[in-house]
Image 1 (cartoon, one colour):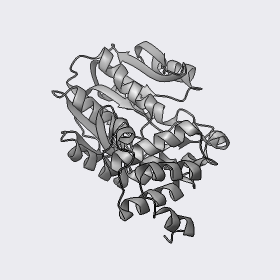
Image 2 (spheres, rainbow, N blue to C red):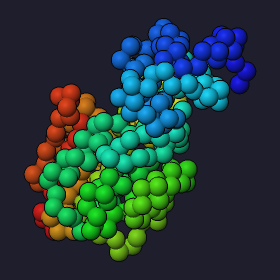
Image 3 (cartoon, helix red, strand yellow):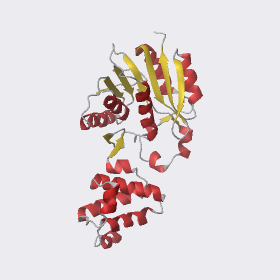
Length: 297
């Protein structure tokens, strides 16, 4: 990428303070100040391993020409609303360091809340299956929380499985990763039984696209986001049916959900024999998680 003249002029004053100010000035028309500050902290954490206090105490440190060039290129990509997580190639999640790229969704705080909910309610489950694992964030976080559990993670897409497998190795965990499609149940172990089945499946309706920001629509994988308007619970139905057949006695199912589909998922789980069904709000007060127990086995 050829850099505009402004970059050449700026490179003559490449202290961290000047670099930060340049980033702020360039991103100001595109993002709110707090978001820009968040970007800056992420950039320096990844490129320089600097904490926030490092940035304050070492503001006069001189950056190399390569570092300045890289920060300028990141700034240009941010101006196109490319997600910072994809630009930097990583994100922190539940104490893990995860690689991410456009073949997987960027893990959200709501998903971390789902993991925390499972951690709060469960006590060393024997077996866990994460369906539609993407980056592997749920499965890997649960394996870290429950090191004695046998955790498996599946996804339909090879590209996603490559990311999940890389994150498994990066975090020195032992999640079993395999390819399977929940809509036709291919490649699931014939005799597999699990104490917990968990999933954050596609749940955004096509009609909701117009409400979404360009950084999601233009960069994140649509196959992991959207479901047909006429079948909003497509994946939940398939996963619940699978769970009825494959959960151990008194096994549990956990979902991340569309905030508009809470009552539908509540009824879906009850109609399939789950008890103690609960819809849980996230920290924003929105119904974003669901849980049920299969006691009739």
